[in-house]
Amino acid sequence: MRDDGTLDDQYGLGGSADRSDDTPSADRSTSLSEPPAPRLSGLNSLRTRLGGFANPLSARPGRTRMAAATGLVCCLGLVGFTQVGADAVGGTEAPAQPAEVALRATPDAASRGSARQTPAPVAQTADPDVSPSATKKPVAKPKPKPKPKPKPTRIAPVAGLDEDQMDNAKAIVRAGRDMGVPRRGLVIAVATAMQESDLYNYASAVLPESQNYPHQAIGWDHDSVGLFQQRPSSGWGAVGDLMDPKFATRQFLAALEQIPGWQDLPLTVAAQAVQVSGFPDAYAQHEWRAEEVVGAILG
Image 1 (cartoon, rainbow, N blue to C red):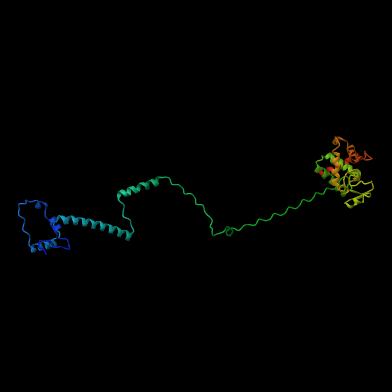
Image 2 (image 1 turned 135 degrees about the vertical axis):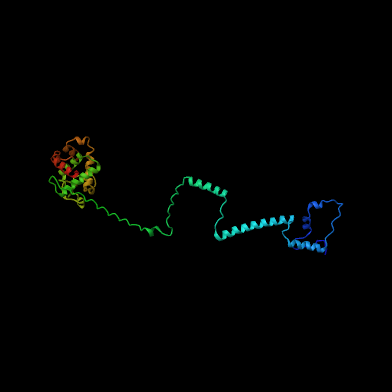
């Protein structure tokens, strides 16, 4: 072991670095001619070291700087530990600095001064777990009652006719209306049927076939059948068709419309032009009755 003060110290208080710091720079720049100072003995060196422990606050430049740095670090650590402890215990935030408070106040004031927009209403959605049928039961609509069929208006017989005669007159008028024949033609047709069959649907004894169809009387005038006593042999139609009052009427009116100016002709002349009867003037006597019957049916 050397006794010149170079003994290793585990606390770092005495060493070559410490000694170089303890010696002022002015002392080192002394003249080289000056003899070096005698080394301290081992006892003096030990006293010097022990003296440093005894007076740790003695002014040493190197240790002063180290102590200042160490103290600053300790202070900063203490402040940080204090703030963290305060947050953990009280949960309160450290008060902001004046500059930071001013910066926060600026956007707050602007937001308070700006116009606030009304939030849009939130559309309510149906609960997917609740079915519509569970919340509102469908109301069964009552079935509309079927409208009763209109009953045909019963037209009372006029002009001395009975029920069968009046029904045959209505069949003539309706068939003519379906064809679009004017009223004058309907009157001529009814008057002709009054003269030919007295408004009864005739079958023929000469044609037993005609009796197989609905009829109200039987005649003997050759093969003449129906309301207008039309003959199948003359080309008016089949026996079964001529026994239908509507078909027989259409056949008569179709022939009437073929006569030029038939609407301006006297009733008896127009009827005779179609029927070619042996009594051409007989139709005129039924004109007034035919007018009354057609008027009652047409209303």
